[in-house]
Amino acid sequence: MLPGQYQRLGSQSPLRLRTSATARRRITLISIPTFLIILFFLFGPYNRSKKWGFGPPTYAKIRQFERELPQHNLDLPFPEGRTGRYVRFDNQVKMLGWNNVLNEVLMNAHLAYESKRSYVFQDYIWKPEYFPWPLPRYCIIFRKWCAPHTPLNAIIAGPTAGGPWDPNDDAPRSISNEWFNVVCPLHERRIIDAYEVKQDIEWLTGDQIFETWKRVLLDAPERCIEVKAVRTKEHNFPQLFDLYLWGSARVLPLWDSFSKSPTSRLLDSSPLAKSAVYRNEYLFLPQGPRPALPASRDPFERMLAMHVRRGDYKDACIDLAKWNSTFYSWNLLDVLPDHFEASAGGGWGWNSPENMEKYTEHCLPTLDAIVQKVRDSKDDFVNVGPRGDGTTHRTLDVLYLLTNEESEWLDQLKETLRRDGWHTIRTSRDLTLDQEQRDVSMAVDMDIATRAAVFVGNGWSSFTSNIVHRRLVDGKEPITIRFF
Ligand SMILES: Nc1nc2c(ncn2[C@@H]2O[C@H](COP(=O)(O)OP(=O)(O)O)[C@@H](O)[C@H]2O)c(=O)[nH]1
Ligand SMILES: *[C@@H]1O[C@H](CO)[C@@H](O)[C@H](O)[C@H]1NC(C)=O
Ligand SMILES: [Mg+2]
Image (tube, rainbow, N blue to C red):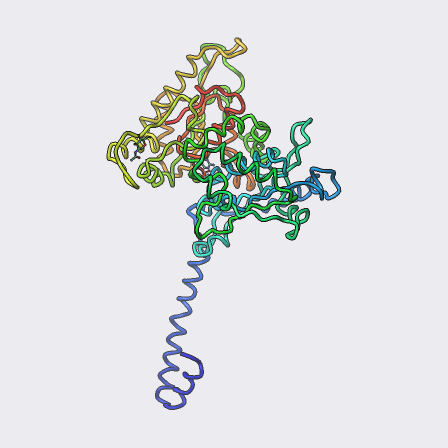
């Protein structure tokens, strides 16, 4: 009803006026509390984790560091500065788990390197459900608008995030999004619609996709290129290297060049993540009896780290089973000892009861299955014999459980492992982290798992696969990389 109509009605009948005045009072009486309830609902916490009462960090210093990177200078000679060549991938996946983002970020950075262009790095944009801090509930509605950011340099270090290349490598260094707007103003950019190139090569192998894009980026005369998802309606996965590629063996032909690339070799955990590992290192010193044979003094050389992927995986594992999913990305590498092969049966979006069970066994293993896997992984590792230097033996007596599990189930797991003879068991929950370190706890856990002598992970997890990547690039033996 329009205000004018309301007035006309009211002036015609005094009785009506009185009634509506009462009604109005009643409406006010009801609507104030309703309004407050709605307000409370909208501004109440959205994601489950209400544990960390204090809010996310501002990263003022890290942001300043990113702004002041030495390559952010127009006067630098080619291939940097105002004559340099650049590429920004605006179509990078956003609002997803960190590791689904990281594998694409690294491959895009490798592509930029091979295409002799500077890579434009961007903030990590969280999937709100994974954000460790409370978010207001209105974010359920304004999901995109709310998505929190973390600067890349808080999570990783290396050339991808703007760090230096090898000493004798004159490749252009990565620049920030912000600097891209300065060095490549809109009118100087060539926009490439990702799908334009992608439509013909979408289902080819990773190396073929890579080579196609490399030609496009190398041959383009334009200094500034922005790859964009222009036609998002027709195309839900506008990434160059998309989830379908990462979730299939088509990605494997990329391994050789990617694993040897400086992008992989020079990738490191951020100083922030490493600082968290350092401050908690005392936790990893073995607490048990002295080993019978001489053992390393380095606690990481005696550590088995295990990624116990839980939480949202209770549902995700069922979907993975229904869609007959293979292991993820580098977890599929042939050199690794553990493989997963579903049996025949099932169809579009469903699977046989036998297969459903098989997926659960490996994707959400029981306490007993976990203990058995730890035993086997330890035996296989120790049986390889003395370490390279010959003075110490392979000893495994420290357990680190990296996990997103939040319930008492974790205590049960620890208890079961303790009964199996482990004296030193630490978990993600035992770490002391400050505000910034808490924000990047996934990078802290990944750093520990990269250093550990043996790693056991979940084959379907991109979190696990990026640890596998780091371990293989660091030269760790395949027998030290296991899956449930
Ligand atoms: N700190 C920590 N976070 C985890 C762990 N497992 C899962 N998470 C959180 O859940 C997210 C899972 O998304 P992603 O990294 O894409 O890995 P994926 O879902 O296993 O493929 C991570 O980015 C973390 O935020 C863990 O072991 N330690
Ligand atoms: C599921 O994958 C396995 C290999 O991992 C294959 O043998 C089987 O035929 C697949 N099932 C369906 C329905 O595609
Ligand atoms: Mg994920």
